[in-house]
Image (cartoon, rainbow, N blue to C red):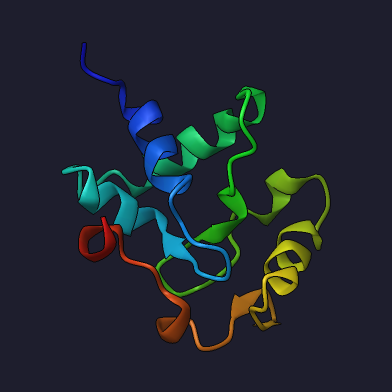
Length: 108
C-alpha cells in the first residue's frame, strides 16, 4: 500500500538530524513533487496530532527563515528549539544556513 504525501513528509522530517535544518522545498523535491513546498507546510501543520514527536522545527523556508514559527505555540518557541540544538538565529533567520542545511536528496 502506497503511503500518502503527508506520511511521506513525516518520514523525511523524522530523519532530520539534531542540529540540522532543511527546507519545505527540499523535502518536496526529494519526494518528487518539486513545486509542492506549500503542501509540505500543510503536512507539518497537521502533524500536531501524530503519536510521535516530529521535529518540525527543523524545517524552514529556502532562505533559512523561520516561517513556520507561529505554529509552535509562541513566537520564540521554534527559535528556542533550534538554539537548544546549537543553531544561531538572528532576526528569525538561521545564521550559517548553508552550513547547517541537511538535504534529503543527498542524505537519504
